[in-house]
Length: 107
Image 1: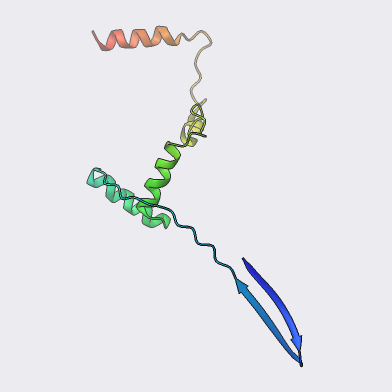
Image 2 (image 1 turned 120 degrees about the vertical axis):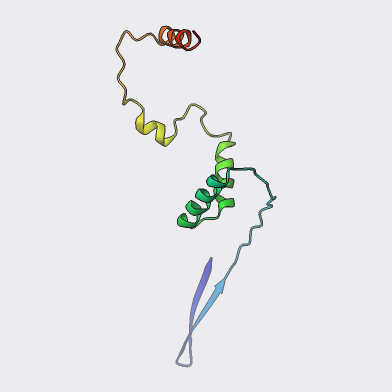
């Protein structure tokens, strides 16, 4: 936040500026993950290109994943994009098709 005040005296215009800084400290903890090297390289490249740190990306993902306010039934953006693309017949019986699939799979 910046507060400004102009003063004029003896033919001199003076500008007073006060800058207020709010410092917030967030407690962080180190985390060791075991991830495939290929995935790490791709993730680091993505982080560099997006101007963020890998820690920030992982932290944001974990925060989103564990956010209790998220609607568990909500669809991800990718799933929303493809939802409704497949048109099934009106008489489609999901249970019957699923049962037939598993019967064929395990024969």
